Image 1: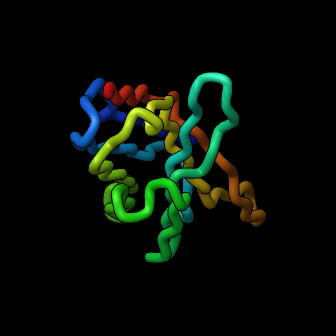
Image 2: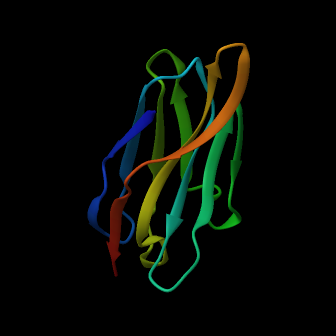
Amino acid sequence: QVQLVESGGGLVQAGESLRLSCAASGSFLRINGMGWYRQAPGKQRELVARIRVGTTNYVDSVKGRFTISRDNANNTVYLQMNSLQPEDTAVYYCNAQALRSSGTRYYTSNFWGQGTQVTVSS
């Protein structure tokens, strides 16, 4: 199994910043892509940002405000969130695609963190 441990959520005012962290551990050969998703009450989970082999992608609503980065040596992904707005309020989930093996077979599995609450007050 692969465990994803998130930290860094909290309550802030509009315009302030937060930094989320997610560390992967467990049984895997390599972590390929990592990313952050969020789910607001009554809404579907959406991709916020992801990073893979140095390439990053962001949802339009966070471009210019959020930055995703990764520490490959420690299998950790970060999300720096600046200029937070009330509409950014959600539970943020870390996601990782782990390369694993079983005998001579190699496969990629998808794993999720437990989620961390981000609340932005106006």
